Length: 296
Image (cartoon, rainbow, N blue to C red):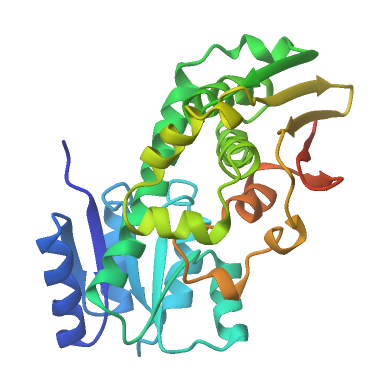
């Protein structure tokens, strides 16, 4: 198995060496850059090399925001996670980074455990995206002829597989698959299984999320629940509607990237789906139905 490779960018030698040492001890392959310019040369020379970029915000030659913007403008690196390490925690500063595409944050000073938790979350999400993209490529493109369909799913595995298949109904399956998968996973985890935000944070932190999902799916109160995906195509639009059998949630807070959640290991899926995958995203009722639209 290929080592997960992290690019560490920091102009302070001691801080950079400490980051590299912690990551190396955890089994990551680490490449170091002592300036923004040096980092960009490495990125530009081999954009597929890195699975995540750990980026200092304040550097004298080229700051972290500029590197971040350049990375996100490249189609071949659009989904590579950039983790911004910064002492600037004011909402306006964090929001600037979120809007530029830094969905993961570390506040200086931070512990080794916090560093490793955020890096693990970012690389896990990126690995999931790449696996989903590969699954989409393997699926048949005949769904471009689909006019109307209804599917039901019960587990995270079924949600991911179905998202990879259903994305082929769209003109750009790679763009749609990530958002569709996020919304469908939410329907299982947060909707049907009632795993709350704080609970999921704890489960991710101690590495037991998948075990807890499996345990809940075996419980009588949950094992009969299913979620639905409906697809409907008209002359001008393609609509994906996802429903679950949960109690719903306060969805308004999750439509935008929030500075309050920037330092968490999850909580980006709905906003990312809205920004990247769909032309519009609308929750209905109590929040257990979402309509995602693509204009054709």
